[in-house]
Image 1: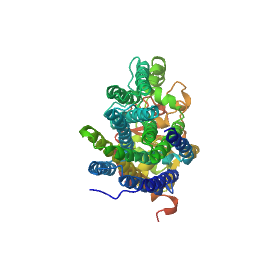
Image 2 (image 1 turned 45 degrees about the vertical axis):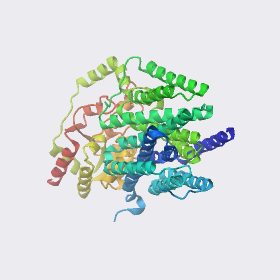
Image 3 (image 1 turned 180 degrees about the vertical axis):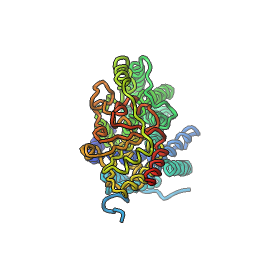
Image 4 (image 1 turned 90 degrees about the vertical axis):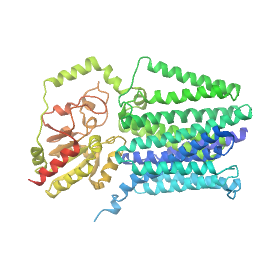
Length: 100
Length: 475
């Protein structure tokens, strides 16, 4: 059991460093899309929801599990789509693709 | 319905691929050129993780899951497609709240599993379950309040009441007490757990309610990293690496982003969270406000007609437009671009000065102007544009207020003191388009309106800009 916990913990600590390093230099204009994009990524909790939703143990658990899957999916789909909508607007204006 | 089950190691590999795609995705999201690809990478990672999980042999019934994904997918798609660009911050808050809610439910279901089995909860499982539920619940209700504040359902002002901080602290200690009991005894007591969960939900509300609407972006960013951490905690209780990695990634990058946002406003995070913006202004009130009112009493505000303003703009050599949230609410960004195009035809040099916190989230104004096809290279950030104001004939301020308030430079009593501002007051003429003399988000007076060089053009931003366009055309 303790071994499992230690592995989890190792991954956790390393991920902190990765998370910190990966966005060291972000221009202010990208703060909003970045917030929205990372927001979509924690929608990964839907995987957890799927794993606990199946336990087929009574209506109460089923309903809660269903709610968790719905909420997680909203987070994922909504998050990625809204981020893409924002970034789409920058895309055509980047210096490489200047209008004629 | 049954799907072929994947061996556990294949699923782990799929999770690894997903985690890598998330990391690469975030990395690319932080540079303008690759940002859109980054988002795409991350979403592919998500798809891989979800499909792999569907093929996990632990999953016995697909009906609930697929129905949930279908419903959530429809809600998410419709919401993301329909939302206007101005309402983006509150939309992100809602999506974030969904994730927090999901994390809280997953943790709670894990607790219930022990409860049904009648087994003791081992301390490590207990700690990760309680952390996931606590942080997830705070993020859930906190995000809903943040949404309400930006949407105008809940008052934008900081809500304060006597003994607020002691009461919040008491609630927090109560939560800690219940958690300690649950972990120490290991008893899967559903009633104690319910009290714990209810208190956590309440704490989310009380945490956000004393923070003013102007600071909501920072709060949303912080709650974003909270949801990440809650997700990581559920990863601990399910021993699922992709949850730990992605949750922690968002937790860490979200915390850094929150810090960067605070830095852009030149305010420490503690001041944002516990400073109760409105209350600071009030505290400085009796002396400060009356002083300022006195200082402004003798001064008058000068009005300008649309025709005069149009003439000034059309015959200027250079104009700097300062867009603010007022422009966004009035949906005037397209009209502003039309005005700028007209002026450019007349040989006027037009620049847009974008304050880091213009709009309601950092970078929000850039998105709004991009939506109106304003060329990217006409947008200037604070440091680049500030030296230009001295040479500018007209600073055209459209629905901006706090970001041009000289009090941030001069008045050490002001709650926005120290925030970098756009030096609009250095321009030769200042035209301020505003709906009324109402103070901005921070709720403080703006002495720039009383500047002898300043002229006010009152009215709805879209309406006024449309009239300006017509007036410039007829010149």
